[in-house]
Amino acid sequence: MPINGISVGKDIIIVLNDNNGNVVTNRVKSFVSKQKTSNRETIALDGINRHLNIPTGWEGSFEMERTSSIIDQFIYNIEQAYDSGATVPLISITETITETDGSISQYLYQGCVIQLDSAGEWKGDDLVTQKINFMASSRQALA
Image (cartoon, rainbow, N blue to C red; front, side, top):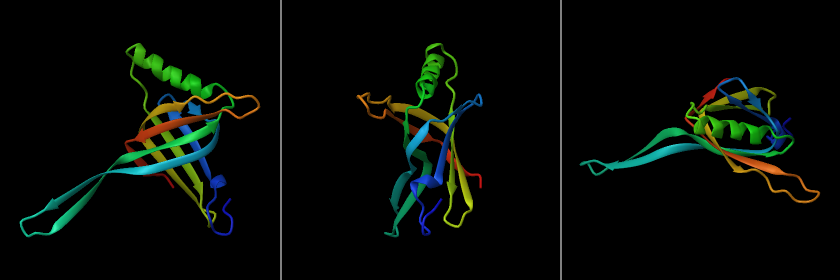
């Protein structure tokens, strides 16, 4: 819920889905997304500089507290699909945000590939945090 008209970290829910309808959730601690673009410029014979900013998808990462082996198994299944010559499933990520006015915004990152950037650091009496990086073909507004 927003506080004093400002979004805070508790205002977002992240869900990771594969093409088989499997939902992967652990306790998400942080989420970062960034639009990817291909920047071009041209100088015509009229001498005017013109710039193009072509959308080329999205990228980002999220960190989760390890509450089970679900992420490890999810990554293992992707590796096994690749190793056996099967089609490696694309992933989708659903981002649901509670806005400051109480309304809901929802975005679907489509055509995602993911990478387990960190399976976690194991230390005595400390939380294990896993990190996943992603690249998405597009982001679609659902709500």
